[in-house]
Amino acid sequence: MIRFIVLGIMLVYIQHFSADNISFMNITPNLLLPLIIYISIFKKTVPALIFAFLLGIVIDLNNPACFGITTFLFIVIAFVLANIKSMISKGQLLAYLSVILFTNFLFFLFSNLIIYIFQINQTFPIGEILILSIYNTFLSVLMIAIFNYINKLSIRLKEY
Image (cartoon, rainbow, N blue to C red):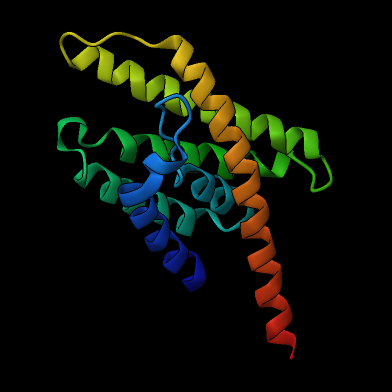
């Protein structure tokens, strides 16, 4: 779990300082959401919830106007995914892709909906939400494959 904490810290810095460089149509992806999805599905429930809380707080500290939204959504996502992971068998790639896409869509939908409700003069960008969900799902699949490789690599290193 230590390697995922270090990875989370690195992703926070990448998200904060250089995520704009990989933006698509001026829409910046959330690089921490794939880590929350991975840990919630493939690790134990309590560490996933604690990890989601801490990463959410760190992201919310960088955006005080919407403090708590990311933390709340990360915790809800971690809780829901931790509870449905037993329903998905390990070989079902389509089920995992569906969960990743649905999670991304719900995260961006609810975060924008909460911002729309509580901030004046905001528009509700449903088109951007759809584009960002698909783009972030693509990044999530790539990043989860990398996380899985890192996890398998560390298991192989322990054998030696």
